[in-house]
Length: 446
Image 1 (cartoon, rainbow, N blue to C red):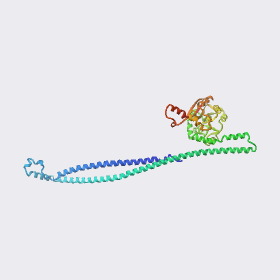
Image 2: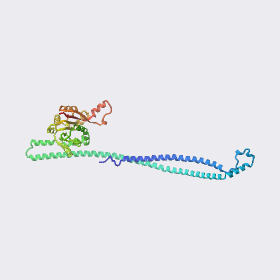
Image 3: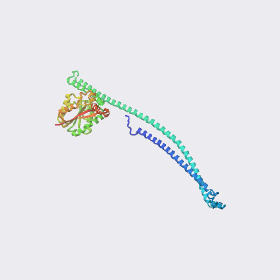
Image 4: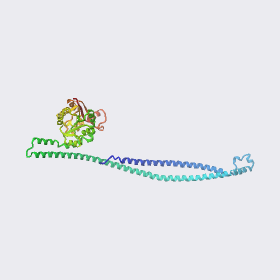
């Protein structure tokens, strides 16, 4: 079977991680480009402003570093202008005294000019590099988008393939289940036919040429009752539910068994109409002593093949063969609706007789209080006789001596099947979507 839940490689998770990584990188690329644009623009703008300011300072410094050849206008006043040669003498003296300082100033100015030239060169190179980086980032973003589109196409293809695989797997399971049911039915039906033919030939060989007597005819008649055993097993496999489902449903009764302190060697549990043996299997797994009986030979053989104690017997005949006060519990799941009224009365009578004091009785049956059950699903099984209202079965149990009887409603329809609303909607849900089954539970007093 195709495994849908592969825990080693989760394709959806892998694709999501790849897509997220591309989006992160694309977002990071855009953020870095935006940041670079902002940082580079701000950086070059600040440098340009600083250079302009430095150039103005250099021009001012250069003008002041030159040799003084002109007397300041502010000093052309008395008493400086009274002596004609005094300004020239003072200018010569100043130029001589500050000769070395002027040389230092000129050297500094030349150094700063060279530094400004280098800065202009660096700004130009930064702009060129920024242009090259932008030219590289644009193809990278385009490539990221192309990869993302390709991943979307691959992701869609994988999802479509997964849907197809799920459909194929569901179809495979349906065909496999149908094959198993048909194979089981054909196998057991052929076994029954073979047994009947062998019995017929054996009896014919023993009696021929004499005619068949009443005992032989009865033998054939009894065997004829088993002609549909394999069919009914296939019917139950289809309508009753899977073995796992039934096992889970029956777990609700285990607390009753534990509380009654039964299922021991001296207080065993008898399951009448044990069918496929789910209840026997659950009891065995829980450590309780139990055995089952059924008139369906194929089902009994299935139980025995699973290592469960089961026998082929009529329920009334078997109970009549048991001594009084010999069983701890008698259970029956979807069996009493198969019995005629007189046989059902005898079942309760023999049940109370063979139970030990404080012994437990559990009988589960379809719930006719549910309109859909009482009018439709009950009649899916052609071997059902009549729906049995819970009040009737509770009254019958008490009339035969069971006490502390209670009705347990079970298996309601799922919530999504119910009608939304209150009032009439709630009443409608109670009538049509309530419990599909109920169980009568009682105890023997003395």
